[in-house]
Length: 121
Ligand SMILES: [Zn+2]
Image (cartoon, rainbow, N blue to C red):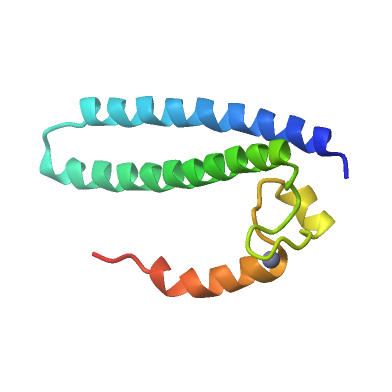
């Protein structure tokens, strides 16, 4: 496994996500500033804002995982599942280099978190 190649990709991704996160925050501020006092438009603005927020949250999650993966490269544990320490499938690592889980544990995790995916209001 070429760890240096993964490191290069992860560092590049970290840069992209950080830049985008900063831009999203700026964008969100602008929306608040530009939002008209009209009640009808306000609900539309609210919706757009919450969508942005979800996307930003997703970015923040990936960014955190990218940073964790970079730390695992330094630790020498990169490419190993954080749950059982088993090797992560090479194809999976190729597609999602920041993943902390092997396919089995990713699936278990997704199954466990699915009911919580429903928004709680
Ligand atoms: Zn695992």
